Image 1 (cartoon, one colour):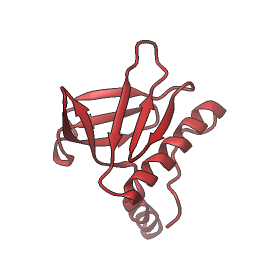
Image 2 (cartoon, helix red, strand yellow):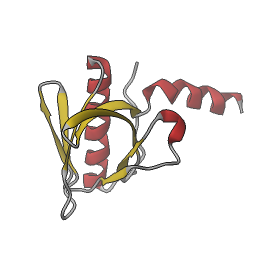
Image 3 (tube, helix red, strand yellow):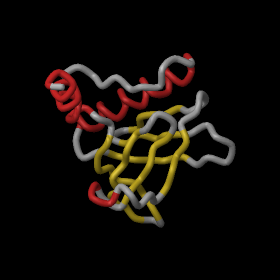
Image 4 (cartoon, one colour):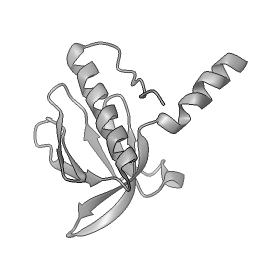
Length: 120
C-alpha cells in the first residue's frame, strides 16, 4: 500500500487540471478545467468539480493549435466549437499542450487512454 500511495501522490502535481482563462460572452473568465480520457470538463472552481459547466469531447479527430499564449482546442466532434484557453504561466501552458498531445495521440492509436504525465 505504501508503494501505491507513493506512486499516486508522486503524480498529483502532474495531472492535467487547473485554472485556465477563456473568453466567454465577450470577456475573459477563469474556470477550473480537468482533462479526462474522453473529454475536457470546465467547472466554476477546484472546489466545485461536481458542477460541470461544459464538456468538450476528445475524439480521434481532435486537434489543438498554439497561438501566442493561448491554446485553441477543436474537439473534432460534429458541431463542436473551438475552445480558446490560456494558462497563467508557461509551465502550465506547456503541460496542457503535452497532456492534450498525449491524450489525442492515444485516441488515434486506439491504445490505452490513460494519460502518462511528463517527467519532472
